Image 1 (tube, rainbow, N blue to C red):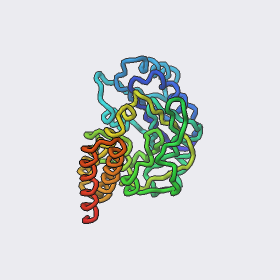
Image 2 (cartoon, helix red, strand yellow; image 1 turned 180 degrees about the vertical axis):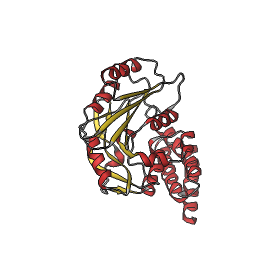
Image 3 (cartoon, one colour; image 1 turned 120 degrees about the vertical axis):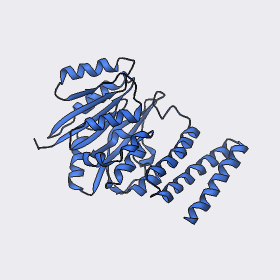
Image 4 (cartoon, rainbow, N blue to C red; image 1 turned 45 degrees about the vertical axis):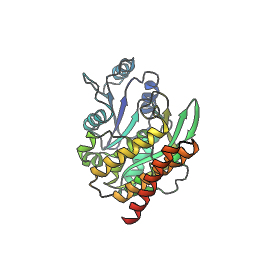
Length: 288
């Protein structure tokens, strides 16, 4: 055993159908160091807490169960989980996802131990939708092994928390104001990337389950894009406009998608609106 610890953050909310698969995939990890599993169940109303407690009884020294009397929401739940972690490194597995490589943590640990300039790394993500497997679309053309915050702002090629592995020191350095926002993986990983590059392991090691009960997947495509655009303005404020041109470029890409989609759907009003925002954004981008 090496003198090191990995913390795994397991977040859940009404995941009784999936939580056992997530936990078993964590317990199967082959690592040569200490492991703790920090569970943040956000007041599930189904059998998720009962299932978690059963694993705690079997592995009392491994599981740390965080309890609260009220629902915290995605962001505050993450915050309390990260605070409770005592490891040198932190991985995340969301309760409706799971890992498919028993060496995931070992490989990610090896990567960061040998790449001191990286603050985090992630793996290729397999998606599961309607019992069909695929690869996360944002990773189809990835060829580099390291990326910067500028790359990530331009496109969310990570796509899912359950693929991520962080240096705990990098997580601790993030401005705590980030937890006052609705913080999805894209925004959080930008903040971590301020502390170092993002490493990529081109190997399928986790599954991102897309289902109707998911926080993101239940939102329509157009509403997803509009929410991202709205969030980008908040992200730019958080980073104090340091990456304003990068964010503006990303907003233009999203407005172009909305513009093209409205043409396809023959919605003239939306076409005019999105078109004006896209072309106006291009002008502002060129003047930056």
